[in-house]
Amino acid sequence: MLKSLFIKNYALIENIEVEFENGLNIITGETGAGKSIIIGAMNLLLGERASSDIVRKGAKKAIVEGIFDVTNNKKIEKLFEKFDLDFEPELILRREVSLKSTSRSFINDTPVQLSIIKEIGRLLVDLHGQHDHQTLLRTDFQLAMLDEFGNYEKLIEKYHSQRKRFLAKVGELKELKNKEQSLIEKKEFYSFQLEEIDKISPGENEDSELEEELNILENSEKLLNHTTQIYHQLYEAENSVFDSLVSVQHLLNELLGIDKSFTGRSQQLDEILASVNDLADYFRDYKDKLDVEPERINFIRERLGELNLLKKKYGKTIDKILEYRKVIEQELNLAENFTDKIASLETEIESLRRDLSGIATGISEKRKKIAEKLKKGVESELKNLGINDANFSVKFKTTKVTGNEENYVLVNDRKIKFGTTGIDEIEFYISTNIGEEPKPLAKVASGGEISRIMLALKSILAKNDKLPLLIFDEIDTGISGRIAQKVGRAMKNLASFHQIISITHLPQIAGLADCHFVVEKIKKDGRVISRLRRLSDDERVKEVAKLISGEEVTESSLKGARELMNI
Image (cartoon, rainbow, N blue to C red; front, side, top):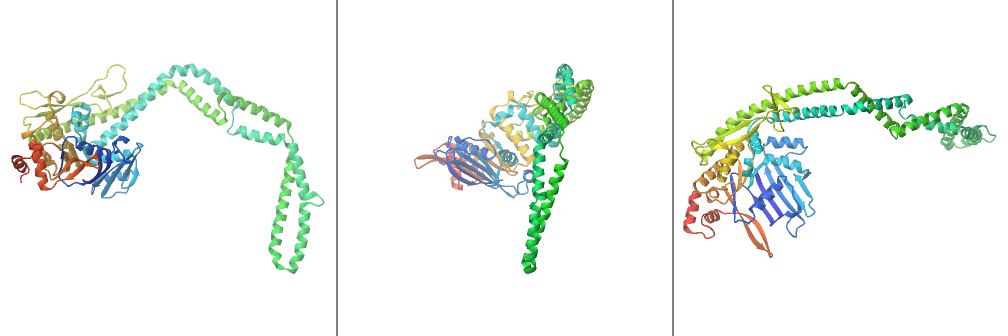
């Protein structure tokens, strides 16, 4: 449930902080007072995108924060686990929108992506806006609602996964067939290129290794001269480094006989002598092995020339050449085994099609069973809402595929079109009077009837899905009088299962509130602001009376209000 809502610097709202109760929370107010602004702020909190236009004039940013009690809500716990968030029984959602149109989202003060807020919001609140009942006339929305009543989410997820694999393979086959002529035309050219590369057969990093070797061979005279001099100065010369250090060692040994504190320095000198000796050995061995090989120099130069020619034609590096060779080799293998590859793909596609057909048929069968339950539930709810003779049903149809279209599944050996939701095209049919044939909902129902049908569907869905909070923004459109009383009682009954927040203009609904708020405009510091205020029991009576008689409250309207409120 929503425990509290905080709105700051949002449109006409300067600062609102309100606590809601369990049961039926009613919000009333004059047209233009700001009821729709509160719904807009709630939509923002639940993940709707926003621009800087919503920031109140003179403020730097707008803030909307909601605190929800999610104790024992296993679905929310699973989502928190999925997004690696720490779960707490009290959930705080917050959105901030700045003048620069930058938006920040937080869950329990942890910054998160907007998509996470949206996904969690779907499990917290079902918000039905003023114009949402029109979406009920769309068949795609009707199918989505039907699926919400079912308990086959995993089957639908499996369908989506299988459909994705199937379409990927169909696309691969189409691409393969499209490139057949191109492969035939390029086969001879690719063969020539592969032969040219293989004739030279470049090795990985071969060019850099050859360039390093060539550099050494081309500078062999300098290397011989310098290494000889180094060896001579280190070891062979009359006053070589080694001989000089030996003389120093003799002197240091005499000092040791006098003062033992020179022991460490004597050891250090021994190590230096050993190092100089190693250096001398290294340079002696290097110069002795050094050999000028004109033939090897010529070979390396020619080899590098061949490699550079390949680089110009097939890539700037040997790695690029080898990558290109791999590509054309694969293309040649494909060209030579084209028929086999197509046959293999077609076999794989037919296997995927069989699996997809089974899953799609399974979803369709489950939908038809759920549709029967939905029929009984809607008709029962509509009777409570004053449509006693409603005949509600869900009509199913599928579309056959003709021609060479590949995107089909098989249902009883018939090629049936499928889409993102499966093979079913459904539409809600209804008649509201005895003797009338059911017709598509869009052609039959009036505005008031659509509102009641939507309320009936929401009621069944809410009882089934256990959504914590339902928000209705003037779902009572197009109804009045006795029907309004029935709608009010239906909402009151629904409020025993869920927390409900309802914006209404009907006294018959407002009178049933467990908690009543009013939205009103006031002037502050020369500006108009909207505020949301909880009403006391006496104020509730007067507010319901206003809804009955208008701005002027009369004794008869007060009496009527008390009757509606059962007080």
